[in-house]
Length: 239
Image (cartoon, rainbow, N blue to C red; front, side):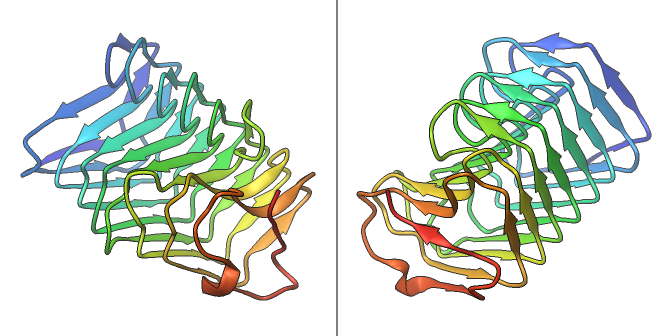
């Protein structure tokens, strides 16, 4: 395992992982712990402006990811991760030329938990804050106490958090006690043509979006019968 504690990674440049790149065999747990700063790092042509991770399990606590850039995952990018846990992080003003301005996750299974994290003013073509792609069957995504604020995308309806289910069905998605605030057109979106499993929104506030709080692509298989939400907190719109 590896631990990064109270470090600064500023204005670094690489193909993958401008600040840190872990290209392992999936057997090692990598921890990013405590008050580290990743600022103005660049992955020029690859993923993960601050961090690119390919590992069995990843944890990151109370870090700041500010002003980083990449093709996918302007702030962070994780691929083939079985367990992901992040708490108390600030992900702000990161840019992706394609997917996931703040965070990009690809081909991941198991569980992914983001707790007490702020995604603010990140930008991308798709998924200004977060973009999940090809997440495997029987996996879970938990978003607890998140602030998702003023993130933008250049593709319509894909501004805040985006799940692309082209490559697989996600079993469960749980935003709880979260705030989605002024993320241009849409707060949380699902795109492509494969059904997303049960979504449960618990005391989650969507505010200030110009088109829809929660958006599902027009060609999506299924209906809203598998979505649970208090109508005071969420609205739905097909377009």
